[in-house]
Length: 92
Image (cartoon, rainbow, N blue to C red):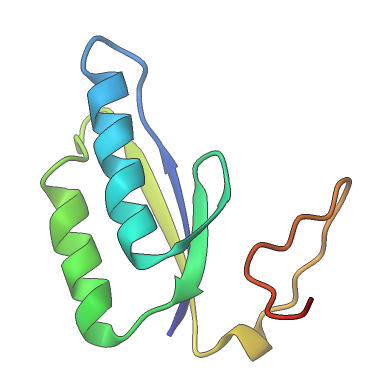
């Protein structure tokens, strides 16, 4: 499945550490697109691993994480507004 993951970590005293850990976990499985946005192809197993890893750090009462799922990237229409920086493109 192809996923787009977006997170928002509350900037309190523990926020920087949680944000750093969330970033590292997401980067392990997906491609970093923008400040707190990742995307990429995941197997069902890696999706479950990502979810399990993130659930250890995300505070359900303070932080939010949103995942958009698609069967494949080809079913997703991407549109850039402003500077185009397609880090997932394989074309050079």
